[in-house]
Image (cartoon, rainbow, N blue to C red; front, side, top):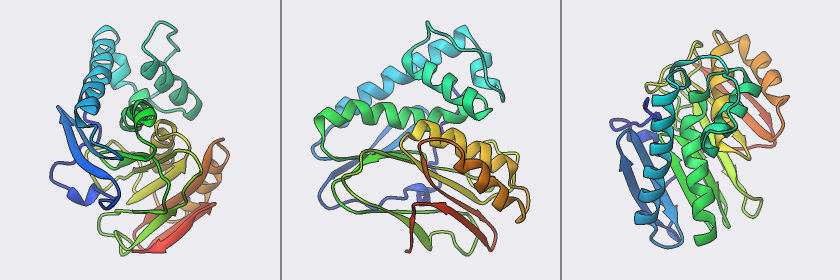
Length: 246
């Protein structure tokens, strides 16, 4: 299975600092590199669930190789595992290949499994985050050589359900992007969907003048609460977002 934006050399991707009230640890399984914070130690449980979802995805890719390689949506498959079905559904809405959603999908599915065992959790998969919080949290935005990189972030408020915070970049990491944006950060209720949308918007930002049209396009999708786009010295923001200095 293709890398889920695992960044072994770029620890700047760890965009949520270790919360004092949670237990934090890493879970690494092949290309999957998770940073997890939960109310109690759940590392063994998360390792098991990570293997479970990876096995489902790898098995499906062996049966349907185009699922891994396609840059366009594929037909739905009612017999596929749930994680695959939801990736196919989201990619069909967004007009991207299903693997554009994979990092956010793994983070979200593990978060769903963790939720009955932990009233708060942060699951970060190579920079894509699914979290539920009872306290205010700050998530920094990494944008390579942009002057905004690591200097701005998003403040997330507690008690509003789970958040999906995902970033696509043409200049950071191995993720495929046809644009030039240093960072396209999407905040929504699903990290699976936010991951795919960040990819879609990143593909259309080739120059500074494209930022406005990308924001307009992104805001049309339901469940999206905020978008931040960075290209060099230009910054574009839309939505219900508390942008902060880090």
